[in-house]
Image 1 (cartoon, helix red, strand yellow):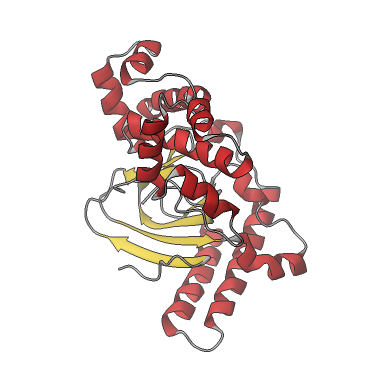
Image 2 (spheres, helix red, strand yellow):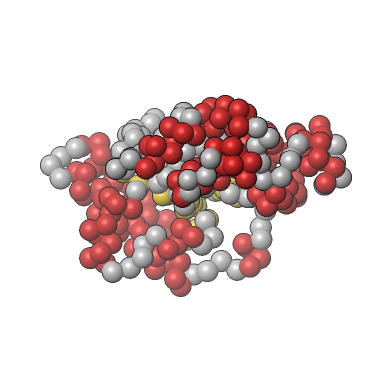
Amino acid sequence: MSTGMTDAPFQFETVSRSGTFNMSHNHSHNTYEIYYMRSGERFYFIKDRSYHVRPGDLVLIEPNVLHKTTEAYTVSHERVLINFAPDCLSAHMADIGLDLLAPFGDYPLIRLSEADKDYVEGLLERMRQEQEKQEPGAAGCMKLLLAELLVWVYRYSAKTAPAESERAEHPTTLHRKVSDIVQYINDTYMEPLSLKSVAERFHISPYYLCHIFKEATGFTLLEYVHRMRVREAQKLLMATRLPMTAVAERVGFESGTHFGRVFKSVCGLSPLQYRKSAAAPNGSPGRAPGP
């Protein structure tokens, strides 16, 4: 079952899958995301590491962060997904007087107790019913319920920080190894990188690196490097007037032609079109890296 995902600044979706499923593309967007695992299990790669997401887990993802789920130990799963732009809640946030987005910069995984799980699932179910019935005021009511959920998350995060041992947890030793590799790429994306050079850095074979990287993150190593570079290029295109060749060089592309080709394949726009779109009033600069 799937409901409701659109390009609007507020999106709510419930999905139940009974068979094998892996996201076909890595994913990033300029909205905030809340992911709730109702049943089943997934590995969730976020930024530079993977998390084992289980029933009752709530995941918070900041804008423009690469993330992707892959199969864990069960093929079936049911999850709820909310994406929202801050502007759609600006009035509620002003009234509440709290920075409800602050928890998104903290540890992304919240493990709920049974009582917390019942409360959160109750809010999500009311949101689903509002979306399904579409009675007068449904859209506004869903935003009110989202604001209530964000207040709960804010209060929970303020009083319950995960222990350092929990923060350091990796699903497997393989995921821990790949996390080290990803962090290295994140730090050196602007330098020449290849499957061979990264494999040599970590004293493993290119074949093994290719295998474990794909298994742990859902991306090939080259896909990940390209999207890291494109994400950083997007920032430069919006914040500077650097020539395209200079942008390409700063983020690690060996030629402007290669940069333009990869950028368009990821964003759907050329670098120049992206810059113009970002500069336009109320512009929406294409899609961020992902499907």
